[in-house]
Amino acid sequence: MDYEHKAKEVGECLQSYRDDASGWKVCKKSNDTVVSWRPSSEFPGNVYKGEGVINGSLEKVWDCLKPVPKGRRVKWDNNVKKFDLLEQVTEDISICRTVTPSAAMGIISPRDFVDVILIRQHEDGAISSNATNVSHQGCPPQSGYVRGFNHPCGCICVPVSAEPNKTQVYTFFQTDLGGLLPRSVVDSFFPSSMTEFYNNLAKTVKSVKDV
Image (tube, rainbow, N blue to C red):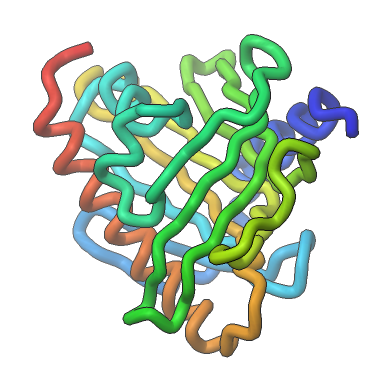
């Protein structure tokens, strides 16, 4: 599999999600976060977009978000129980396995995902993680976990030019959780989970010292 080609494709895909404002429908809104959705063109489900401004510099916010083994995200993101590096393809492209805990009061059992991840620096100063599912010989499906599949997803951190201590964070999720889950469970899980994601990220950024 051409991991580099696939990584570059997902990077362009996420950028297009950020740029294209058409078709999104708001499904959950709080003081600091807006979660929207629209039908996915990648699989028979939805793509969800989160938007929120986090109080913290881009460097600090990214330090909490960046997808690296033993990084901060495993500690604060309730949907990431374990994160392992399977292969470092290039300096900015890696193959990783993410393990998620059970969710929705146990209705959603533990999952694992294998993705190619691209870390991308943007011309406007933004930095992003861009991921999509791949197969890897070092990580076949394992007992005890339902193998899920992430379609183009990730996070984009954008500096707020007028306020250097604030960062605009876009998140995109479109995940085939696998298994025989009722559609209603999936549709209610993601908006609530993404709101919690922003709340926990904001608390973590506030608690860490400058990086």
